[in-house]
Length: 115
Length: 114
Image (cartoon, rainbow over all chains, first blue to last red; front, side, top):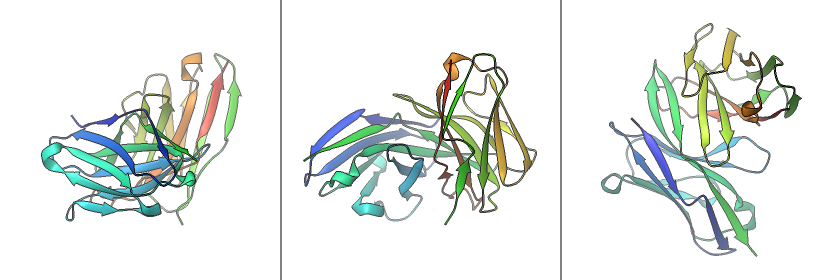
């Protein structure tokens, strides 16, 4: 069965510092992997996704993630944090049921940016 | 832009009440989903639907039912609300595209059951 583990429920970095949010997955088939962001009082917004091909995926707002099959990881990074990056981030892996994609989410990581 | 709307941002209900949460999408998507979001647990799938009048149980369907009479609308029903159903409820939709489609989320409904 597919599952996702996000290491660290809270991460705090200084403005301008590197952001690293960790995600490990388990999947019995080649995975499709996603990162979503949730700003306060809003729904989830797609940051980036990996399906096949290039293992380094670039997303919106300067974020990127690298799929590492050998480590079963899909960590999210951003070189320089902005105050506006403060949000909750969710990693997800997909499974296909009845032709519909079902997402299995990690428990989320809340990112705080210190001025 | 894809738009997924939910009928209420905030709801307060009493234990035992029947509660309807409505979700509408405007992109002609086949698939629609209902999740609940709780701190430390991430999002958990309650039900999903891959076509009109079709529904499938997700991971935590107990205490909930759904209805999809029209393609654009997916309703979540709490037959008899209980305090442990206090949560944030998120609706999502997606277009079938070989299994690689993105799910688009609504803004969420925060439900408090007293």
